[in-house]
Amino acid sequence: MKYTGPVYRPPFEASSLLLQATAGCSHNRCAFCAMYRDVPFQVEDLEQIERDFLETRAKRPGYRRIFLLGGDAFVLSAKRLKEIARLSKGILPNVETISMYASIQNIETKTDEELRELRELGINNLNIGFETALDDVLRHFNKGFTVDEARTQLLRLKDAGMDFSLNIIIGAAGMDRSLENAAANCRFLNAVEPALIFVGTMHIEEGTPLREELDAGLFVENTTGQNILEEMELLRGLTVSRSYFYGRHVSNVISVHGMLPDDKDAMLRTMETELKEIPADYLNARPTRGAEGLVLI
Image (cartoon, rainbow, N blue to C red; front, side, top):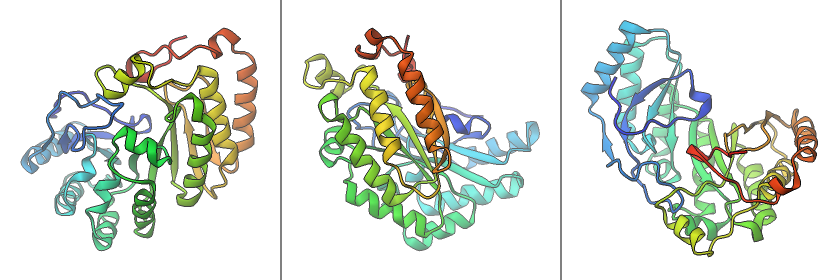
């Protein structure tokens, strides 16, 4: 198997075949992220992808899911994605779903018909870095899309029958706008109803523009306690009919997950109970982070 640079995947893709379809990130300009800063974006040759499929068939042919690697593998043309899907069906017939990271801009480049065709070929469960439903924060983060543009493209995915998960960053707006961020995210999530809501807390990587602002005092992070309260406020306001809430990122001090709306009250009770057990000096401090946003206690 060929891998270039660091390999990232959502935690719930742990059992998936990790296949390099792209390396790096086609956008690679988010103000808080350095995941692919040193990895030039490139598209993998179809011949190499076929070799990786054949190697997988020889060693472990039973995979049911594939996760296409790269910061936004959905940037690939619909034609290339269909070629990959057809290759997988010919070589690994047990595969049911092909998922990947995607951006709002990636969706916009596909027609409605192409989205439906991709879904029919098993491409589904796109993992999308939405981050926040505050337009000025999206501009600050240099995400390259607006809230309205995101809503339009995500509803197009739903019309095509394609499930998606949205990444939400707790603390994205800073400490003075924590509850405003929660309220905006609630309104947006209730409108688009993703299949999965992935919640993590703000992690500003070294060597990024936002880290420079943080060091200069121009961006003020939530305290650990504010992060927990913002997540609870978000969870309280969600009225989605059926979405999985995944609050188990390593940066989340209190780990909760469950199906909404069924498990909402139980998750809130867990957060309320565990919040009372955390020392005040820890809650009032800013998180100290390790690799990939892990909160160090």
